Length: 546
Ligand code: NA7
Image 1: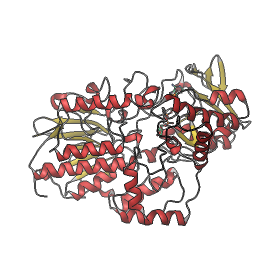
Image 2 (image 1 turned 90 degrees about the horizontal axis):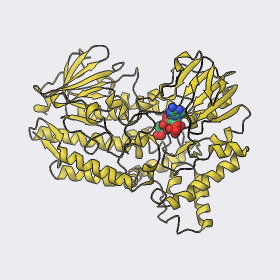
Image 3 (image 1 turned 120 degrees about the vertical axis):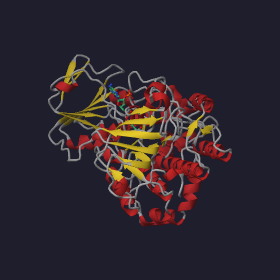
Image 4 (image 1 turned 45 degrees about the horizontal axis):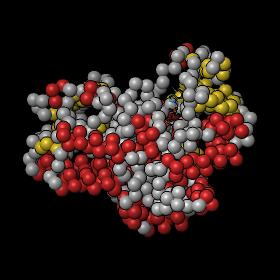
């Protein structure tokens, strides 16, 4: 490629000085950043990936809390861009643990020789578009500067942690951990009284493991979450070989599915089934394990009455599992199942039968204070030696708005998004030319298997840059009316789905003061991909190319 795209080409892999100029800078070396680097190299561009962490892997680098594993099955939560890669890598369990996923990310980096263009320990603080040069100027926390024609945010949807401003937290004398920033050294809770704040997906994975080790575990629950058993197990050779023999078929089937995951979706309405049929279907899915429980019937996320039948099934399971009826009742959610992301667990509810576990139900009230020695709730202090904040993330927007991103005329992304994220297709935002987001707000992202969604975005961006190059186009950004129309559509579709009806991180409700907007696109992976392809086929409809 000898063209405009390479107008600041540097020799590759020089361990380049940080004041350097590149064709493209990619922020983040998780699954999105790694694949983006691979594809940009394929275009012949000079690329640098900037990563705040001391290692690659993104969310899987940080989230190393006890019990951390993916809730999408490992054979599907993996790249498909290279058949050699998917044939040679051996997943060992139905749901991969965090260490195994991190090993996989590192294997990919080595296999495709990616490390030489990744700068670790490099936190980006500023990304500013220079109107005169049409280039992105990047500043890092340690004061380095670099620039690029294209800036690609591979910053992740669940990477900016949410630490609530608990009164007195800084006074706590013991150790404080956040599940999303877990230390690399082993943490030993043996003989300790531990407090876990939060009962989302991270907590639900960590609680059974911590309970087995700690002297006593107090769980501070603001809202109960629904969770279904994972039924995790080692993958047998036969299962792996069967999948590998038909991998392309599996991947294609997955792409036709709403969530980008291949599974059997029952096309029947829950309300057309008899009570017995419903129970059999829910029981079979409960025994099978995993999030595909929500595929028991076709209307669980569209019809409240249908949803109630699944929610009641899970509440019955909680009552059967948890011996103390008062604890079972406190653990039983009353809102729409699947509204907050459905969790997947190993022995979560049964953990509350242990004599060393206490559920402290906040009943929707805030934690009063953290003292030097414990957690104060309703006037009572629970003494703990260690605190685990399983309080989640400033999801989807946090990693972007924490960077001072400035577009044309100096407009900041933070200001532009102050009433909620605004992006066309979740890929670009008007006023920020040549700045791309991978799985940004307004794309299916967190509602899907992240790996195929990441690959689809990376491939779309790659094709787009190749198009710009071929036609000598210097700049691309969304037209404001197309962006506005997409946001209207994102909101309209959200309104048809029960997922928009509760206080979840999908709507930003977990972060005080965050505008309440359903952020991901809930129209499904196939419809979204079709829209992206149509936009390209129509000559990048809705984008301004100059
Ligand atoms: P989540 O799902 O956002 O869970 C966070 C939990 O922390 C949740 O139970 C919250 O209660 C609770 N929380 C948050 N702030 C507070 C305060 N101020 N006081 C008490 N409790 C609080 O984060 P996870 O890390 O578990 O999972 C995130 C995603 O990662 C998950 O969906 C998977 O996709 C992977 P709330 O429900 O808001 O009342």
